[in-house]
Image (cartoon, rainbow, N blue to C red; front, side, top):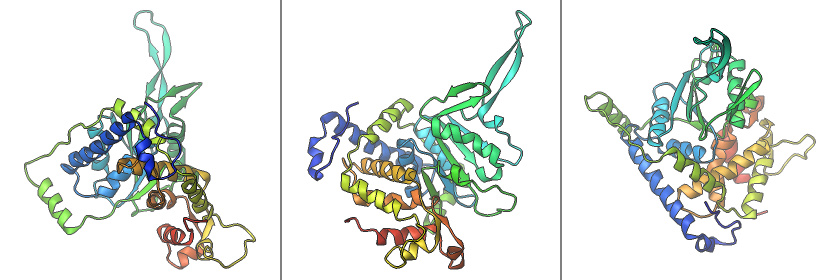
Length: 351
């Protein structure tokens, strides 16, 4: 598939995109509308979450869903995999879950014909297209870490062998913010592997009425397939070709750099009310995901370039799990979202 124009000088860059790219972008936007339409048969509301899941998937990222039980997190994941014709596996994370229960293991088998024994690999549930890691904070760090290589490299090492995962590969993990006793909070290194941290909120009254009506009757809706996995791979390549101006890239870098409190930095200025509450800021991986997420958002909206608004829209889901707050934030009852909001106001789009 051809690439979009490599640089953006003005919105007139739309006219420079060749016919194939324009057709594919139109196809992607149509597919997004159809995916949301099909998911709407099963999932009520949660439109922003669905859009963010699609963006994460198109950018080859992974998503962490944060919400109380009963909000349809598992249902959203399963329905999205059905509309995209992706093989789906769900793993319920528990304290006794072992790394081999996720990645797979070598087993000794006997050849019935010769009577000789041989070692063969039995793949675990990670060998799929769409993996739902349910309540990932309920299992020890050793088992949580079993996903790290798969999420980052798209492969799994067992013994002396390394096995590639078949693309597309997408991990959606869920966390329950209540009943935190006896859980294992994800370490910063693993949190950083997730592109987005999405907060799943309660439905409105009207949406809850529709949920009740749709789940307490004899009628059952079924989402239909919209895209094939092969088409999804082509769209993932297209997203990376979306042009972005140097000024937008520099704004992204300045935005992320502004989250990093530096020892000995003079007090005062617009960032003081942010750095006061931060122990550590975001790494360059946040900048990469901000740009990729903005590209995905732009192309899903039918645009041919990334603008400042796309970066700002991606700031909260990309940064909220990468900012390490200190005791001042807890004392003043501030969360990461509040600091991201301050950050967007403090960092101007113009240098």
